[in-house]
Length: 110
Image 1 (cartoon, rainbow, N blue to C red):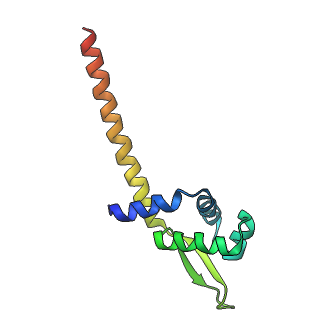
Image 2: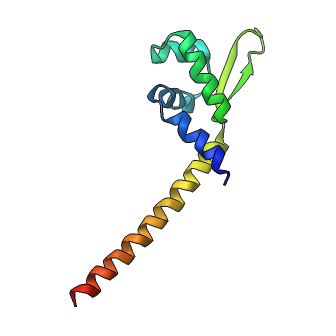
Image 3: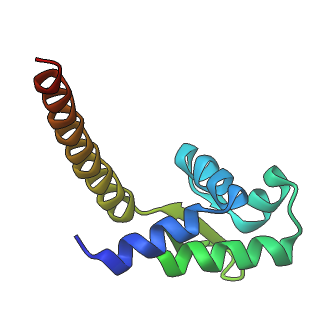
C-alpha cells in the first residue's frame, strides 16, 4: 500500500463537499455542472474540488463524445480499495490490542 496515495485520499475526503461529490458519483458518472447544481456549490468552487479529487486519484475525467467542452467525472476504484485495506488492517491491529488489554486486566484481577 502506497502511504502517500493513502494520504492524498484521506486529505481529499476530509472536506464534506468532496465527500458529497463522491456519494453522487457512486450513483453514476456526472458532468461537472450537475455536481455543482446537486451540491449547491458555485461552478468555480466545484472545479477546485474536482481538481483535488482528480489529483488524489479518486475520480477521473472524460470528455463527452458529442461536446468536447463537457467533462464527465467518474469514480476510480483503486484509491478506495487502498483505503478499505488500510482500515481493515487498522481495525485488526486495534482488535488485537484490545484483546491483549482484556487479558492483562483479567490476569491482574487474580
